[in-house]
Amino acid sequence: MIAAGRAAECGAPVILLEKNEQPGRKLLITGAGRCNVTTQDDVDDTIARFFGQGRFLYPALSHFYRPELLDLLSHYGTPCVVDHQGKYFPVSNQANDVLQALLRYVHQQGVQIRLNHRVHAIKTIQSYPDSPTQFVVSTSQGDLSAQAVILATGGMTYQSTGSTGDGYLLAESLMHPINRVRPALVPFLIRESYVHELSGLSLQDVQVTLHQIEQKSISQRGDLLLTHKGVSGPVILRLSRELHREGTLEINLLPSYTHEALITELLRLFAQNPRQQLKNALDSLVPHRLVVPLLKSTGFETDMQTAQAGRELAGRLATALQRWTLTVTGQAGQHLAMVTAGGVSLKSIQPSTLASKRVPGLFIAGEVLDLDGDTGGYNLQAAFSTGWLAGESAATYWQAHH
Ligand SMILES: Cc1cc2nc3c(=O)[nH]c(=O)nc-3n(C[C@H](O)[C@H](O)[C@H](O)COP(=O)(O)OP(=O)(O)OC[C@H]3O[C@@H](n4cnc5c(N)ncnc54)[C@H](O)[C@@H]3O)c2cc1C
Image 1 (spheres, helix red, strand yellow):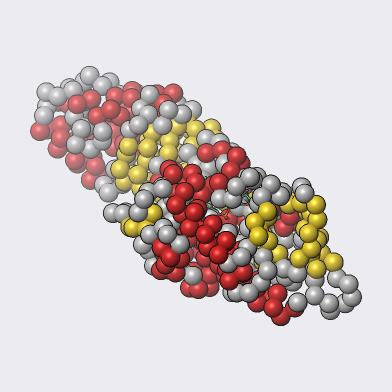
Image 2: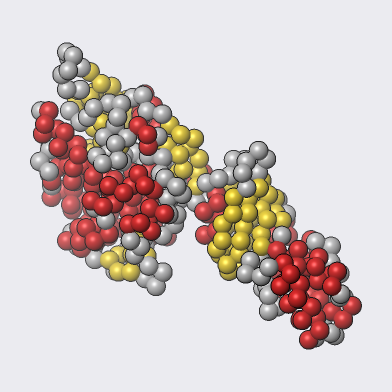
């Protein structure tokens, strides 16, 4: 919608093809229905949230970033505010208000919206050498011709919203390499059933390392949430783009302690309360609900008195707390992934215009690109910024060639 609106604002006649009976269905479920439109972070910090791929976004973010987005939304009736975590939401807390603002923008610029038009092929025709490319866009309701095309079909998760991955096939048919597409920002399923009984428990500031066969181990630090089927929370969502099939999680529940410092702290706690049972001695270090299942799973006698616990036991306990190991059997499902990692190779796209390097007149924006960011408004900001730049570039291209 942003791409279409901006292209029309820059003077091009624009048709927006949408396969659903309404545009922006995914937008309605973002931010749990509140739509976290953007972030308080500056451009460089936002780039850092794209797992090594963010530099590509620099021209788009420099051109149209948070201030421009917030102005546009406010101008079309949806002012936004920032919360204590630096996330921006509409004042009304209604994602639908963001959608309505975008629809007003698109309508006011004169974009024709054609709903229930699923694009299934895009072909190029060149009448004679050096003539501008003409596109034939085949939809479920017939063919259209165009002098420029913007592909912004999104990823392939939450397919009920319309993002079914069609864009990858369309881009591939136009000679664009597609990098391994997989769900990201998605919880993990865990084999150990005692974890499922801890559903709802939140662990703050833990260090999680994902080990997989024949893959480099990767660590992230942050908050973790136990669910009825496995684990979630920011630290897991961030790691999820790296999971191939299955693996092992090694969780350091107390990353701010060195192993030795933790042994010393445990011995201090034991000495302080020698008559306490082991299961009650760790409350200052980890949530009480976790202690018994964790100790049992690692073979400790939970009822023993701390007076009996010596340095050897403190060492084993420190290892259990800093190397808690869980088996990952997979991701919680494509339908639960917030974004798609992988997609149209950034090498085939010009970052300064979002023009395809393979097909003149084709522009590609949004999640269909091989870009995925962290939670916190980064993915929508990237979609808006690339959409804006692609719209402007497509209009410039059209003006030069029509
Ligand atoms: C549950 C959930 C919560 C999220 N919350 C946030 C959040 O709060 N903040 C944030 O920054 N990000 C969030 N995201 C991610 C964000 O929604 C996406 O990154 C963003 O919507 C991508 O925008 P897009 O325009 O590229 O693709 P989409 O929003 O997926 O839009 C693509 C559009 O193209 C249409 N389309 C697809 N194929 C065809 C075709 N062949 N023909 C015609 N039309 C087609 C689709 O129907 C769809 O309307 C969330 C995602 C999910 C799933």
